[in-house]
Length: 471
Ligand SMILES: Cc1cc2nc3c(=O)[nH]c(=O)nc-3n(C[C@H](O)[C@H](O)[C@H](O)COP(=O)(O)OP(=O)(O)OC[C@H]3O[C@@H](n4cnc5c(N)ncnc54)[C@H](O)[C@@H]3O)c2cc1C
Image 1 (cartoon, rainbow, N blue to C red):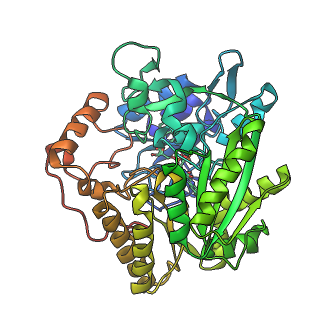
Image 2: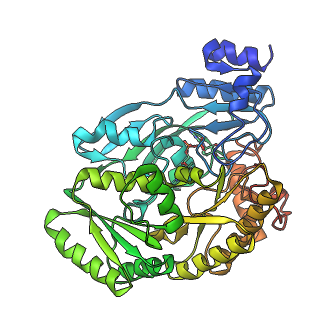
């Protein structure tokens, strides 16, 4: 029997896709297009996943796990054909333990749906990537997703208590934070499908806060807004979220959502504080004073839940809203020390200007995590070249400022050749050794994360055209 017949026999006809028009869909994620896989399976259980891996092994096919495909670095698209394992059907909340504030979920459960399903119990799941209406908890685990509220709650890794994994041989094992010895849970979170396939997840839940306030400060420019963020945290205040949008992004967001952001300001700072109701007025006046000291031209407090929701809907929908400016955007994901944000943003503007591109900035300012959106039309080769040039300059500048090449979107194959900007050959060889412990034959999501040749310690220098080169 061939690959298709064996997968169909094991998982059932409706769980296996083999038609070219079906496979073509899985050649895309939110970043890139690659070659389609040779087959796609939609397992219903961990046993199905294990069977699919064993059959893929026997047929010499690599496997690529896939959540919702919202990844921004090409992680979920097959680099070498093979079998895509989609978790679209393993999408349920399996158990809720209110007393111990934890839940057992399948990897295909959509992030926001978890919090919606458990709301009546007074709990929520804190990691909230802006894609949370669509992206899956499994994909979030595999990328160690961040999000606006990770400033105070931490990233996905801080909320994962244990995992059920199918390994490269198709064997099932579990990890738990309670285990003594090495922290395998922490190792697997963020491994982008290269160390194991996540088939179930124990997540930590948090108590819904007594009170949540949302404030909006407007500034003349994005640098002043960034200085304010440094000053707030420098004063020992850590709000739940500190998000900046510049005037380009605000223009798009207002046209799309009418969220009430001021369109005459150079930048806005969205501040959220969760906590006890009695503390809120004092907290607001402390933050407001800092904002005014740093040039805030207006201050607004959202008065109703509907107002808070609308401001957040605008922020979380910002990337999509830029479709009003250009058919395509490339979103860079870089980090700098918070105090270097104004310098980094100035340099983003200069790079975009040099390359004749429109750029908008929307970012997790509290974490020093920049997301410049370079807008372009991918049918125009000159514009594509300009985005590659500007994207690379921004990346290098942030590294030079003491930052790093990814804040939260991961490496995938987009940035695998740039890993050597921040790690030495020895560092990479050590990481590759670790990968070899889990996946010595490189059958799990091959060609991701590591620069070509790193397995034999021949690390390539960064490729001049690494950004969006595969779009
Ligand atoms: C508009 C927009 C906003 C975004 N905002 C944020 C943000 O605020 N913060 C942030 O961190 N990211 C953000 N992202 C990026 C993306 O949503 C995240 O990386 C998300 O975690 C990917 O989840 P997914 O389910 O779509 O996974 P996919 O894109 O399907 O997969 C991502 C990676 O995880 C692996 N994977 C998926 N499922 C499994 C599994 N079960 N086992 C093992 N490996 C698996 C894949 O192989 C791939 O390498 C945004 C993306 C978009 C388009």
